Length: 141
Image (cartoon, rainbow, N blue to C red):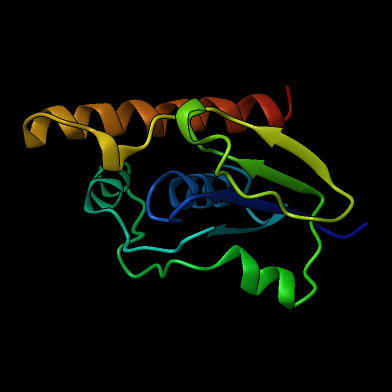
């Protein structure tokens, strides 16, 4: 049996989906093929880079990718997980095909207000929520 294929998607592929991709890859070893993409790819969020670096994962060189490019390439996945918050859920992309769809409502670090430390703390919370969701859904009990 081959590796399960997982796609994390959100609006810009700048923070939540990037964090999720890196965490699943680190937490599950090589048991999954993992990718992330966005509806409107933007720039990698420096807050995401910082909070991942804090736990020893370097995503600084990651590029944002378009979910439409993956679709045009005919890619197929076993799991497609949207990580948009509730206010953006109507914009959150849907990837066609036969796969298990999951939605994890997570706040968008791009929307965080306050000092740098306050925004980092909120982004750490999102990272930790993603880590918990991965453990619940993809790691042996």
